Image (cartoon, rainbow, N blue to C red; front, side, top):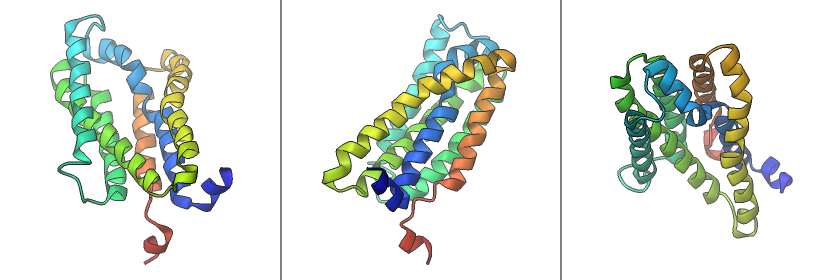
Length: 193
């Protein structure tokens, strides 16, 4: 299995991108109640917080569905890079807001970029795998996606206590911006042309 990851640059980059994105950039998903309370003055037990979460979910659903609907036929490799860049910009804006009103539409944009990116990344990865290794590679994918988010949030907790939630979320946005550069998922043969 590791040989397959080393041999196929695109498969390796997909997994490195997702693992890094999940660990650093998705900390805000777990720490969103802290962000809402400290930056927006929204009680995490209130209906206002539930609405903020719903707006993020709405953006995520639209982002995931967009790949098979109005973005169908577009370059998924480009969508990954644009999605990471859009995520970085929208998450930066979200982290710097101090008023709850603009946080709601910004949550939709963050959710959209997040899930459009992850859905495109998954599709690019699976299109490069043959049936013999797909299950094993996708098991690594699931661990990279779901397994590193809580670990990243656990590491971020003391950092938030020592600094601020805003700084930690901005670090996640900066990592997403760096990944937008790194995530060149074009086939090496076509990328050289």
